[in-house]
Amino acid sequence: MPATTWSRHHILSLADFTVTEYDTVLQTAASFREVLSRRTKKVPTLQGQVVANLFFEPSTRTRSSFEIAAKRLSADTLNFASSTSSITKGETILDTAKTYLAMGTDIMVIRHKQAGVPQAIAQEMDRLGVKVSVLNAGDGQHEHPSQGLLDLFTICSLLEPSHPRLELLKGKKIAIVGDILHSRVARSNIWSLTATDTELHLAAPPTLLPKLFADCGQDRPGKLFLHWNLESALEGADFVMTLRLQKERMTAHLLPSLREYHHLFGITRSKLQLCKSHVKVLHPGPVNRGVEISSDLMDDPEFSLIQNQVTSGVAVRMALLYLIGSGKIS
Ligand code: NCD
Image (cartoon, rainbow, N blue to C red; front, side):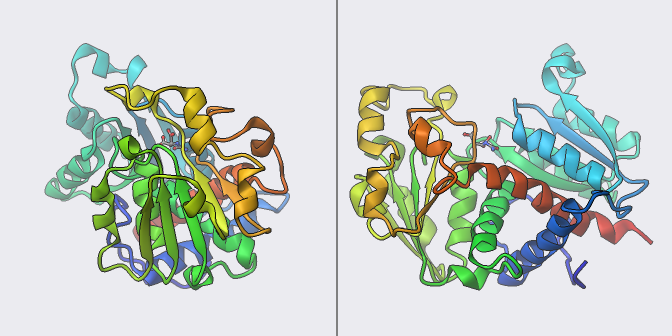
């Protein structure tokens, strides 16, 4: 593993991540990717530590990815799903967290539909004076830092597989298209993808991309642009990230119809002709096939990085667990 001076105890947001922190995560993840390519894909790094996955909201890839990442590091894992837990009997979230603390948990990976829950639990752990680290695995519409970091790793690894680093993004044009309003993935990616001298273009119908998103681009090394049509965002893009229409978070009729949305903002092979010829497409999943991206494009390895993102996710989450967990190994 690379020598590291990592000092961040909880990972709750990318808003204040430094270039050094991004590069440490990318480099550490590259080392773990090498471990994952071996016949024995396991290292003893977190042996004896307990990683609890506290998912108060449904998840397929993030929960499984954290679980396999913890197991590859030889940690003991506890999995919790709120629908089958004492939450249904009225237990509070903080009491659930304290229960896992009392069982010797070292790292809590937390997902909740309400923004701020991982932070509230982190504050409670700090108040109690315990060394438990909290990792935000997605809180409401706020942030999803591990997804932002795995997207960054996927892009930088494509640009230079042996040495992924933030500066590789310099001068690149990246477009994020879709339901930005409801997306914690977009919010984390806005921080990471403007952390160096890039052009980040956000595109969506006005109902899914309010003007206030322009504020996120202030005082960032990268430039942020907002588009209410797709074409200008795609022109000359090196990477296009599409986002799921989050119907479960939509409280009003924000779109005329899914068909019209696909026609105007769905990513298809023909629309990609506006981009650079080497353009690649990302999507955090889960995908509404034929809505935000055409089904054939999603499965086309020439353009789609969607499976690479899932694979990258394990190495990046191993890196995050290692960086916040290794401080406790004496
Ligand atoms: C995302 C999430 O849950 O925020 N998915 C993920 O973690 N891979 C995006 C989504 O739900 O659309």
